[in-house]
Length: 339
Ligand SMILES: [Zn+2]
Image (cartoon, rainbow, N blue to C red; front, side, top):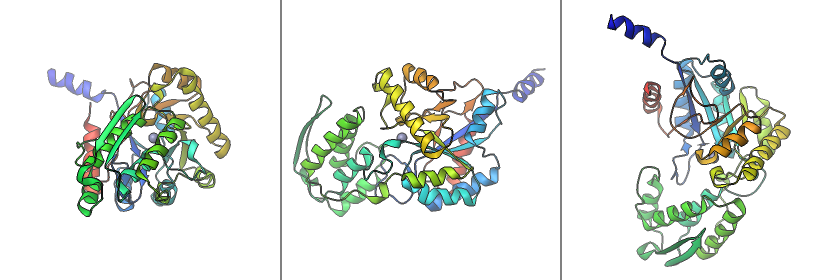
């Protein structure tokens, strides 16, 4: 009797879907936040996904969720931020394998010769051949005071250690990594203009004169329009200046969402119905502003599958790491087993 009851329950267990999160496809100098998948691994991952036959458009997944008809084990692909490498490297592979994808775009850097603040910070800290021996700086009420000791001049050993550091899982292995993390934490909650101001102070302290890295550029308006022309792809919102939304009042959150949505809609002529929160950060006011701006759904970076009981404005996603096909398939299998 118990067995019968169990099979009854398992047959009617709520279906679940996975939303995968990518940021970049390319070959980075450093990848502290594990945001980049190489073109080779990306192609292997697409081959694995093609074989599952379960990849659907994110909007289709959301429509299924709203109708309580989620397709079990379906998978949707997303890219955040709007890096030019999405257009240059990911687009053609997605087209080759005919796999749909939604690109969530932070619109503030479109057509600008500017990097995201975290890339510029990485370039200053990890590429400056020589840094001053001490730094004493106050950012957002945080006093950062460090002595770089024998790491003032960059050597090959340090370059290799810094390049392999993964900040999400490992403590900083060098003083430069420790400094990067302290500055990153202090800069993250600041508004865009403050971030730029503090970054130019850090740049001046480092006497950093290297030009901005072209590989860190965001898509141009023309690239974005071209991407949006393909029905395989959808465009989603990711705010104007990439703020940690929960740090701001309702009005600012509202304008970050609305201005971004309107800009992307005007530029691409496509509906902008879905949103991803920068850094996955949100609060109750964010959800209110998201609903009011007319979004169908919004995504965090919390690694949980989508189920019928999931909240439309705090849906989970899984960050895809730079893995070849076997590791990627294991990750998908593991995520599909999650409760
Ligand atoms: Zn982002």
